[in-house]
Length: 156
Image 1: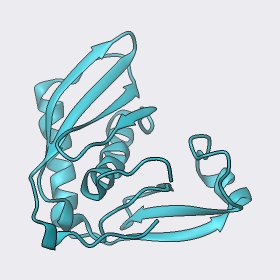
Image 2 (image 1 turned 120 degrees about the vertical axis):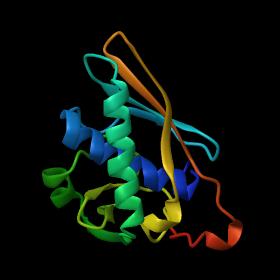
Image 3 (image 1 turned 30 degrees about the horizontal axis):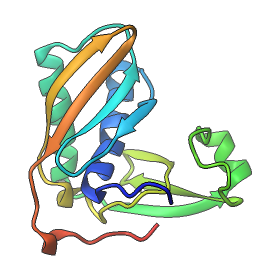
Image 4 (image 1 turned 120 degrees about the horizontal axis):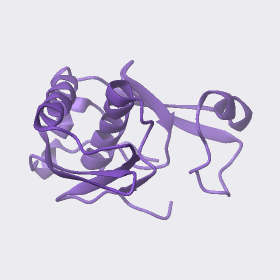
């Protein structure tokens, strides 16, 4: 694995991506920069978000986090994964078995990163800012800080 992501932030990114697609039909982010203190996701979209939309995204995501959904993994063949998922962003040297990360019944996608074992471990999500330029909507988000003993990582 080339990148080491913060497991809480990376797990939150999965939920944000699914929420954005469900609310706005924009698909998953096409680029992401995941760090422990703040992260950002870029989406192909046609405008910036309103304050009410930002609050709705935060509410939906925090409701899912509070639901304490399990975050699990399963492996499927690359052939089957290419039918149900976009595998273009996976590394070229990935095996024939593709790892699918599932957030309860809410989200599922191929992923090589580290994740927490349940959504409750993510804690509180909030959007610090958004901006729109040239067909790209950027969302910058943060999480409430956690203590080390709350982290139960899944091994990639």
